[in-house]
Amino acid sequence: MLKKEEDIVNKNALYGLDQGKPTSTLIIAGSVAAIFQTTLSYPFEFLKTGQQLHRSVPGAPKFNAFHPVKYYFSGCASLNVGVLFKTMVRFGTFEKACEMMKDPDMNETQISGIRLLAAGIITGFMESLWVVPFESVKTTMIENAHILSSKVQQVPSERVMDAKPTKRPVFHSPVGTVSSREMLLRHYEANPSSHFFSTVKEIYLTRGVRGFLQGAMPTVFRQLGNSVVRFTVYTWCKQFLSPHKPLDEYKAFAAGALSSCAVVAVTQPIDVIKTRMQSKYAWALYRSSLNCAYRIFVEEGVTKFWNGWAPRLFKVGLAGGMSFGVYQYVENLTLLIQSKRRSKIGPLE
Image (cartoon, rainbow, N blue to C red):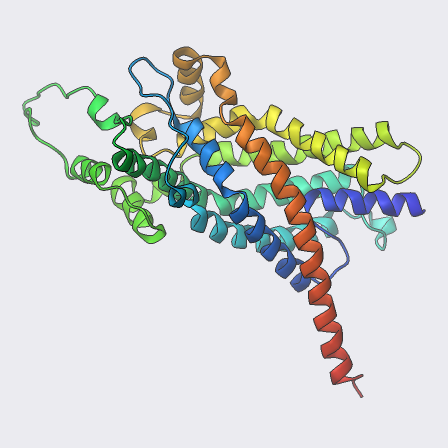
């Protein structure tokens, strides 16, 4: 019985979720932990996204990984806002998903195994829908930061608008006619937005509402892939390292690290496609996610699908350790405050 309960705790920790605790406590602890780890590990996110956006085509400048410090946190605000929404959706959805997955004949017991995996997949799907707009804003802010940094450092940067072929003249659109959308695109390429709200305005004016939903399908598939791969590898590691007793902290760390490596190795191509489809120039380069994958394969080679794997692996590993530690600290603090309040109020008559 003890082993089964330990398994459930380990798998809940794997998703950053817990069954049976107050939802408010989980949301507070989860939000603080997520914002803390997102902010501290964000420079790796900046490098990863920059490497994925860089096109390895003839004539393109080399990727520049060195920038003034402030640019390494471009887009962090957007990701943190998205994290808040994602955390609230995560715990609310997970609680309801666990209720749906419970065995009617064993309604009082906590779910485990395939049922827990299904609850995690449902939760991942719902939270990925909420995070898509903020991921799109983040990607544009990072893209703009690279343009601004290139100007400051006076190094060449890729200019997709200049690389576009000129239009053929037709009777209703003579040569030299520039649409209002193209004027806005050229304006923002020359004067990129650098803050959250100005970037939101840029996306809306140049791409419309659809601009906030770019890369939605790759984002959903990546999130589902994360859940499935992490759960499968972690469970396999546990069965291999300690099949008959609970994992100690060292083996649990090793299992978590290996599952993180597997997540990056398997889902990195989807992450690259997601980032490319959220680019401010995606409308000019790719017709769809499949077309994006095809062009990357043909023009840049298969290895391009794993661009940015190193910073992503550092980010995932660092974020996991920090998130777990901060989450546990804030959760304990919140429960302590709540228990003190209840003791002051006293029992209800």
